Image (tube, rainbow, N blue to C red; front, side):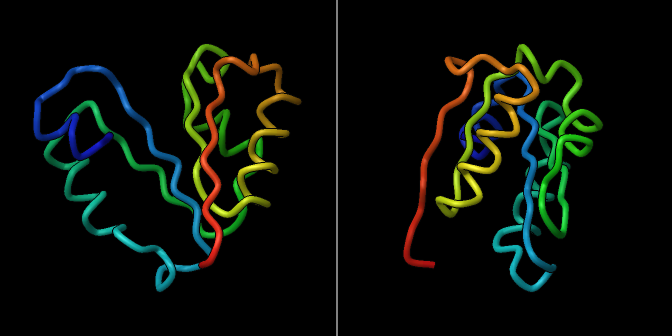
Length: 102
C-alpha cells in the first residue's frame, strides 16, 4: 500500500510502525525510509524490540480513529491486536494478516 500511495501521489496519511529485533532483521528498512523521504504523507516509525502502548500513543496522533493493518508472525499480530483492544480501539478498525514460516 505504501509503494502504491507513493507512486500514485495519494494524499491520505500512512504511518508504518515497523518493529524488528535488530537492524539486521529489518528487511526493506532502507526502501521504506526512501519512500518516506519521497512521500510527505508516508511516515516510517521504526523500533527495535516489541511495540508497546507507549510507542503507539507516541507515534500515532489519533490512534483511536485510525485504521490498523497488522501483519507479521501470528504471536506478534495477536499481541498487537490485544494491545489495541485494551486501549479501546474498536474491532472493526483492526485488520490482520498472519505470516508463518519465517
